[in-house]
Amino acid sequence: MRVHLDAEKCQGHNRCYALAPEIFDVDDYGQAMLLVEGDVPAELQDKARLAAANCPEYAITITENG
Amino acid sequence: MTDTVDLSSAEPIMRIDEATGNKIFSFERNGETLEFIIGSSPEGTDVWQRVPYEADDYGSVADYRTDFDHADPAYNPSAPEVWKELREGGCPVAHSDRYGGMWVPLTNDTVNEIAYDTDNFTSRSVVVSVGRPGDRALPAPIGGAPPITSDPPFHNIARRLLLPAFAPKMIEPWEPEIQRLCQKLLDEMGDIAPGESVIDAAVQYAQNIPVNVIGRMLGFPEKDEELFRQFVHDVLERIAEEPGTREGTDDLGLYIQQQIAEHRENPRDDLTSYLMNVELDGNKLDDEVVAGMVILLLVAGIDTTWSAIGSSLWHLAQHPEDHQRLLDDPEVMTFALEEFLRAYAPVTMARLVAKDNDFHGCPMKKDDWVLLPFPAANRDPKKFEDPDSFIVDREENRHAAFGLGIHRCLGSNLARLELKVAIEEFIKRFPRFELAGDVRWSVGQIRGPRELPVRILEVAE
Ligand code: HEM
Ligand code: SF4
Image (tube, rainbow over all chains, first blue to last red; front, top):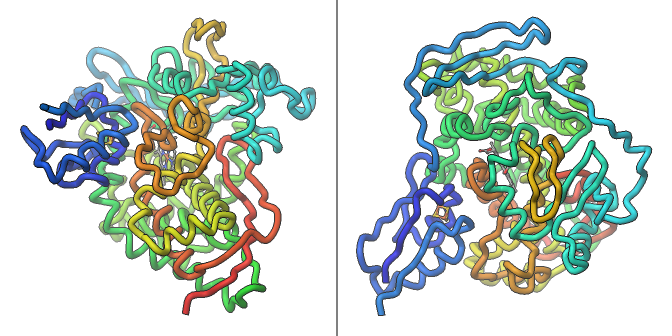
């Protein structure tokens, strides 16, 4: 599984950082940043899905690689 | 950020506008001149144009489809039913001749579309009233209270001044202080006799939390708490009055000026000093701009948060099962918090139509009002399953309580923390309570209980 963050869409609601701090960090302006590069470890996949499902701006997308 | 802005430019030029006495700062940026207006906006100038509307000519609303009025005292108590009825009756956008003409999108799709379309819908005024800013005096994209009244590209400049102070990592450390302030309010309720004592959870609790918190963040003396609260509440009450009426804002303005002067002598690590030191194009902000930003934070952050706390406690007073779940399983608060915000979103914003446009068959004319009810979007069945049910552990919750797009609530991290702590402390102290009479709801764009009598059934040891 991979997580993609669209920085153009992100408005800093910080839902992702609250729900999955292992995967998302925030900068000094409250904009999200991805901490995980490449495949998301199995134990974090549910959290990644939860964060994506709660982003009000639809800035987080997930691709499942089979 | 969507629009990155080149902040390097010449010094601002200040001039006094003779007609209004307002100070006007001009900036050159990317070959464009931006104007930033500071000063009172007396009526009779072109700053505010009175719209042809007398509330008395209309009376109370008979049909929300064609005569929508969010300021009808009957609206806030039953707003979710109004939205539902209109949506189910096939009315995605209601209209009203009030306020010189107003449109009201009621579905998630239409609210989203307007929130994201900053070309056709300007934020120059975000509170529907009997006055609108004139073309000359409050030029887009800046408006009277940046960034909330600003449009791109200036919006981003003003917003970035404030963002760092409200980023999650700056807000998190405030949790213990907010707990202490909530506990203090609970202590001040005095002796409570379980099963008998009735307290007003809005007046004695919710109402005081955000004002006390922001006062502490600004570094205003705790001994002034009562005084500051009074000044702020006087101003909030007057907001609804006609624009141009400025009585009552003087006490608060003067107090803030004194605090700025005091901070100049004794600089310290707080929000006031932050605002005094922040730089716009290499220059510190004028004291009046600092005071204006403080007032914006008070106006945007206080009755909003107090309404969210009040509505949440109102819900818990009637739903002991949700209350119990929070006590048994404190982790569920992560989801409950968002569900309180979704179901009882307190903030409806507004826009002005920037240019004539046809919005899904609605002939919108420049300067028509558009009410932007994020709370209605939050209850659209096309977006949320079972939207009128409060589901304490709703897992997928992309609600719009804090708005959508570039104006996303700047204080959302603080507001969430205050709401969470306020509920936690209240239910910890009072493990059981119930509604003890009629709720009085606010009138206007901010929806929440203004009187909320609850009977305390149990007090924690
Ligand atoms: C539960 C409490 C709150 C709610 C529901 C709320 C809601 C909102 C909404 C919906 C907007 C979007 C405005 C628009 O689209 O025109 C907004 C903007 C804003 N809010 Fe809040 N707010 C809350 C608390 C606060 C607090 C505590 C502060 C600061 C201390 C604050 C400061 C602001 C500011 C400065 C803006 C303007 C942001 C911009 O235009 O870029 N709010 N708020
Ligand atoms: S939840 Fe969405 S909008 Fe919010 S910070 Fe994360 S990515 Fe950005």
